[in-house]
Amino acid sequence: MAPNTASLSNDRAAMRVTIGDMAAALGLTKSTVSRALNGYPDISDNTKLRVKRMAEDLNYMPLSHAQAIKTGRTRSLGLVLQLSDHDAQRPFLAEFLAGVSAGASTEGYTLTVASADNDIHLIDTFRNLLRDGKADGFILPRAMVDDLRVSMFRDADVPFVLYGRQDNDTGCAWFDVRGEDAMHDAVRHLANLGHSRIGFINGGTIYNYAGLRRDGFVRGMAASGLNFAPELVIEDAMTPEDGARIGARLLDLPNRLTAIVCAVDRVALGVYKAAEERGMKVGTDLSVVAYDGIHEGAHAQPPLTTYSVDNRQAGARLATLLIRRIGGEPPEALRETVAATFLERGSTGPAPQSAHT
Image (cartoon, rainbow, N blue to C red; front, top):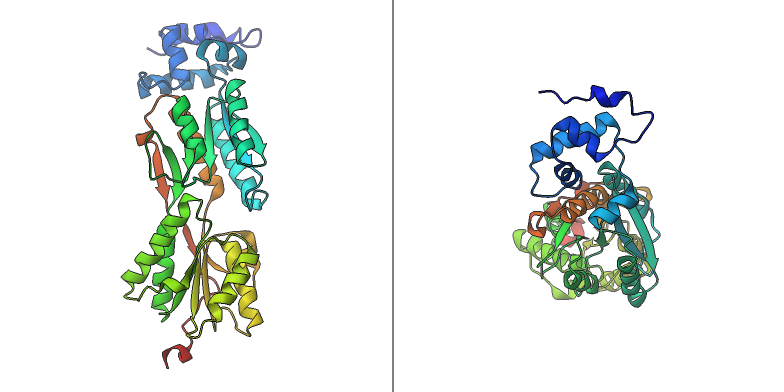
């Protein structure tokens, strides 16, 4: 039987549609409609879809304050940005926030954003948001090796989702881009161009991604039949200045390498400077591959070959996963990874002939 919406249509302009109105139209209890709207796992997907469509048809808008009192939820997602991060203000952040906001609003949630200056302030900020009931759960960008945020939310039984992964994955939901596969494929790309002596400049080892990307590089060397040389691997580089300094160190080695893989685009741009200072042309004398897909890389000379990350998509998926976690889905069912997109540009080319003589 089709829902009886006719009796409500004349009242829409005069009064707010209530859960009771929808329940009567659907032939369901108010409790079932409420639980369907809030994504509870004990409600079937078919019932959730019926309720969602009815809410759209009747232009149902919940009173967030009343809903928070009844359910203990604010329908808000929390995000705390640590301003001391090396690239906290960079353009990718705008894309990421736009994605999170879009993903939240699609499900009728809002986004609460706060900032912190350091690790201590970060934890205090989270505690204040929890105390004041500002968010139902939190998105945690930049998964760390020893992540105090994860420990805190586990202990408090607060829903969270990581942008990144954790080795100790108990209670962890996440969305991540497989940077380790990108590093593996970067080596394979260079090996196919004839490079055999390849350096690797990794990112900050406090972040969980660094270990994954290092492992990907090592796997790529093995898969290409190349000898792994520990002296050609240097870690904890995050800025162009780091890239210039470490690039100079690698390029000044007696047995000169012909290619460098960088775990971070901004570091690769510093390697460009080190190469230029030594009269080397990137893409001809030295090949460089990196990871992130920042705008500066596209405008470098030559444009940087890199593995691009869709931060807007990542933000949207993190919001969706967190809302599902808030709705009661187990974290083990909320783990997604995607591949980065390879952008082959001018910074890679065949190994110089002198490298084979």
